[in-house]
Image 1 (cartoon, rainbow, N blue to C red):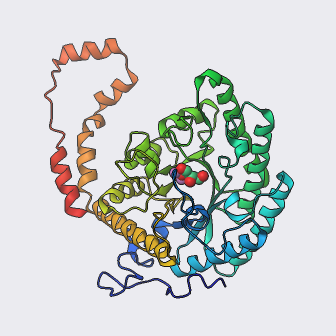
Image 2 (spheres, rainbow, N blue to C red):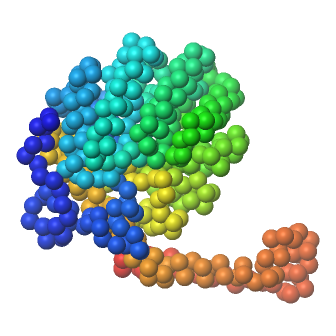
Image 3 (spheres, rainbow, N blue to C red):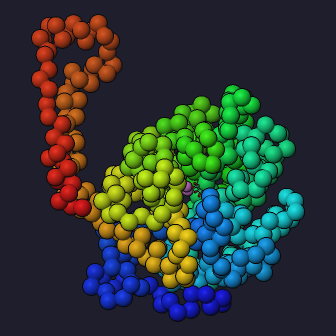
Length: 433
Ligand code: XLS
Ligand code: NI
Ligand code: NI
C-alpha cells in the first residue's frame, strides 16, 4: 500500500442525482445496452504512462508533479505498480495499458532492460491475479530514449533496427505473459526531420519487414491478441509514415498484412491529420481493420496533441455510433490516452479526470445506442442507396462503359438530383444526443 489515494473512496454508480463528485452519474457497468453490459461495450482502460509516469512537463516547463514513486530504481517501479493498482481498484475499470518504460527502470543495456521488464511483469501479474484489471494492450516505447532520435524500425543504422526488434520481442513476450488482448505499435519517430538526409524507399522497406516480423513472432509464440498500428501524422517527427487510417491501410496492403494487423485510432491524432475521429473509425471499419480507440481530445486552438480527457458527449457519441455500427469492440476497447493538466497536482485530480471521462463516454455510447435502436438514421442511409438493389444497377457494376452508354441512350436516362437531407438527419441526431 502506498497510501497515495487513501482518502478517496471506491467509485460506484449513483445515478444523475449523486451528491458527491466521487460517483459515476451515467456509467453503470451493469446497465444493459443493446443486449450487452455497458462495461463490455466500453471496455475502459487506464494508460500507465500519462497517469503514473508523466511528471507534468511541457515544452517550456519542468515537472510539476511530485509522486512518491518517481525515481529510477526497481523499488520505485514496484511502488508505482502498487499505486497503479490502488488507482485501478478505486476506478474499477476492466483494463489498463502500458509501455515497457512506464513500468520498469531504464537499464544500462538490452539485457538489463529485459530483466527489469520481466521482474515487473511478474509483479504486475500477481496483482492482476489478485483481482486487478486485465491488460488491454502492451507496447514498446521506441521514441523517448536518445537512441531512437532518427527512428526505430526506420532508423538508418542497422543496430538501432536490431535494438528495436529485440525490444519489441520482449514487449510481445511480456504482453503475452500478462494475457494482453492486443499489442500496439505507435511509431512516433518513424518519420523524418528533413528529406535532405532521408531515403524514403529504404525506410519503407525496413518498416514493412519490421511489422511482418512482429506478426510472425506473434504467431510463433501463440499470442492470440490483435496486432494494432496507431496512426498519427506528426509530432514528434515532422512527417510520420503512419499518417492516418488510409495511409496505414495502403502500407498494410503493400506488405500483405491487411488480414493480420488492425488499427488503434486516437481522437487527437485524427484531428492532427485533418480528419474527425468518427471519420477515421468509420473508414477503418469499412476497410475491415478497426481495432481499438485511444480516447482523448486536443485543445482545438493549439494545433498540438494535448491529450486531454474527453469532455464532450456529442463528440464521443459520433465515435461510438461508428463503433456500434461496426459491431462494437472485439479485442479493442476505450483506452484513456489522456493526461491531467500540469496544474492538477492532487491524487483526486487523477481519479476525477477518469470518472468524468467515463461518464462522458457512457452518455455518448448510450445516445448512439438509442439512435441505432431507433433505426431511422440507418433506414435513411439504406433508402439513399436503395437504387442499387435493382438488377440493372447491379449489372452495371459488372458491365462496361459502352454497354452503359447504350442503355442510357436507349432508356433516355436523365437523372433528377435528390436531396441529401442533411439538416433533417442532423435534427434527428440531435433528438438523441
Ligand atoms: C502518442 C501516442 C502514444 C501511443 C502509445 O501520441 O498516442 O501514447 O498511444 O505509444
Ligand atoms: Ni497520442
Ligand atoms: Ni495513443
